[in-house]
Image 1 (cartoon, rainbow, N blue to C red):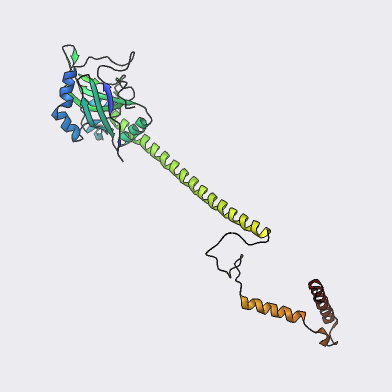
Image 2 (cartoon, helix red, strand yellow):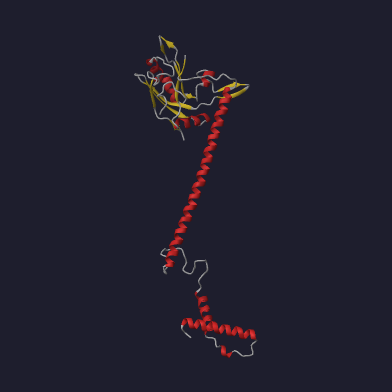
Length: 302
């Protein structure tokens, strides 16, 4: 998904700073001719105007650095972060522009910073001084910097519009910057994946907890109904009438057989039993007789 800024508006005559940055007097008419001219507008429309995180690449390799640089016999890609998708200048010095963050390591880092309301944009013009005015002759994009010279250029000679531009002069710094960007982007991506995993686990735990709470509530309702001597109030449309609570099937024919056996037991005539039983058998018959008498007494059928 593309991430773009809102249309950002600032005025070339008002930096919004009193003590930091660099004051410059700009030839507004020259800026309008350049920015609103057909050449630059076509380049913007075609998506050919890019910017970097900071001004370091331009300070090292020029205002319009090539896509790759050779350091130590190796080719290093200078990875851009943003692209200018709209820019327009007005007679009162107002300049409006919109930037799109690229899907690169530098672009993703810049987008996160922008969404956190940090950093801002810094225009890159070739603007030599003519008759005491800096006269824009070419525009090379908007870099994403920590301290924009024009404080309102945030969204929330070379004229590198940063309040504090410091060049890196070490050998191989382009490769180091690219490696740093990739490392930071990878770290942020890993953190996001870790957070997403924790979130998924938490949501799964919440789901299980909700299911257990729901099952517990149903059991409590059924228990309360039985304690009152009635039947559960819930309607379980999928339950079969012959299915008992613990999974045993109710079989009417088997129940009749069991009742018949009980009836025969209760009606058995023990007097017909011979007296030639062993002492153990006599004790067993006496125990059965006592059981039958007790049951009849309880039922009132004795």
